[in-house]
Structure formats: C-alpha cells, structure tokens
Amino acid sequence: MKTSKVALLFFILIPIVEIYLLMEVGSIIGVLPTILLVVLTAVVGVTLLKAQGLSTLMNAQSALARGEVPALQLLEGAALLVSGALLLTPGFVTDFIGFLGLIPTTRRAILAPFLKSASSRVHSSVRSSTTNEDIIEGEFYEKDDPRIGK
View (tube, rainbow, N blue to C red):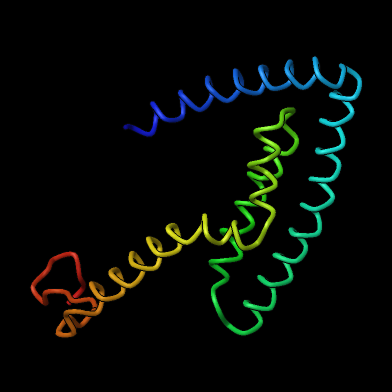
C-alpha cells in the first residue's frame, strides 16, 4: 500500500475512532469527567515529555562530547516531538500512541528499523566513496590554452 493511501487512511480512520471513543466514554462516565480525563492525559503527557526530552538532550550532548554522532538521540528527539503532538491531540487512541512513544524501550523498538536503514546507507556510501583509491584530485591546465598567460 502506498504511503499516501496509508496517511489518508490514518487521517480519516483515527478521528472517527477518537470521536466514537469520546462519545462512548462520555456516555459512561459523563461529559465533564471525560473532558477532565482528556485534559489530564495531556498535562501528564507534556510533563513526561519534558523530562524525556531533557534526558534525550543531555544524552545527545554527551555523545557529541565523546566525538560521536548522536543519531539515536536525534531520532529519539523526533519521536518525542511526534509523541508530544499526539498527546496534545484530544483523544484516547492518540494519547495511547503518544504515551508509547514516551517509554524509552518501546520508542527504541519503534526506531530500530530506521536506525538499521540509516546505518546501512551510511556504510554503503562510505564503501562506495573509498572503493577506487587510484583517483588523485587536482587542477590542471594546458600550456597552449590562450586563456592562460604564457
């Protein structure tokens, strides 16, 4: 299935499920408790997001101090950004997915395929750039070239 079709399905299906769940929960516990629950999950999520974000930033800084590229930390930062957006979106499904992104173990499990893909691309580009060592870079000119003074 193409990415655009998956995205379209996601943006149509998720809001329908969210509205349905909000209506069901609202009919069971009431409108005001449902609204308070949605606000509470957003507040708790943002608080956890702040702590995880600071931890990821400190890990990235320590990786840079060791002279390493903080690839994992950058991907985790992007995942935390998406998780934060999901937590701020009203609804229980998006909150659940957002909270999964805040748990370091599940976040790394989700990011593992992206890291493997990026790592293989870096290694293949390094190999392809170092395969022919007979190339000597430099500049040249012809002595008979009229553009160059004799």
